[in-house]
Length: 159
Image (cartoon, rainbow, N blue to C red; front, side, top):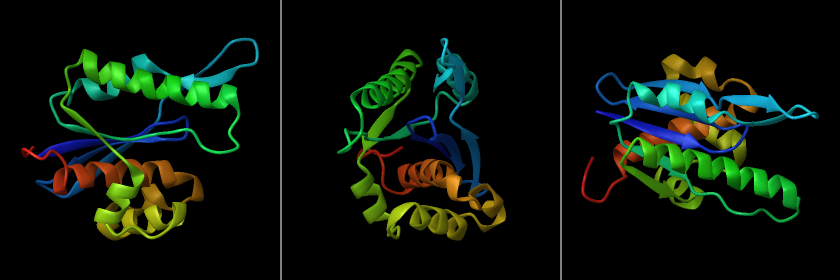
């Protein structure tokens, strides 16, 4: 059985967990630089390319919300990226569930902060630990843990 996990955001990732061989395939969130200022934004067409081969697999997406102190433009762009992801899932008619960070982290007993996610991903997937070795790999770790959470706890009526 396979399950996708998506950590939305420019530094997020997509991960495909395969329970048959307990492996994880990780893709950094695809982005493009657009406009005069070359601002990064989520590349919808590249997400479609990633999901296309396994679009029949269930998907777990991390719930996002506004964060104190974040600028209006940043929050708008973050929400737009989240909407792009949900729109892609709808267009592929992917079965998906949105889960809060508090829920999946508690269920998987993930330690605090970004390092907690990376440590748990290394523990669960030691053969692929190099994917989570850098501080900036927290998006990869979160997406991987979301995919694993989907397999273990997601979808009340079963996958």
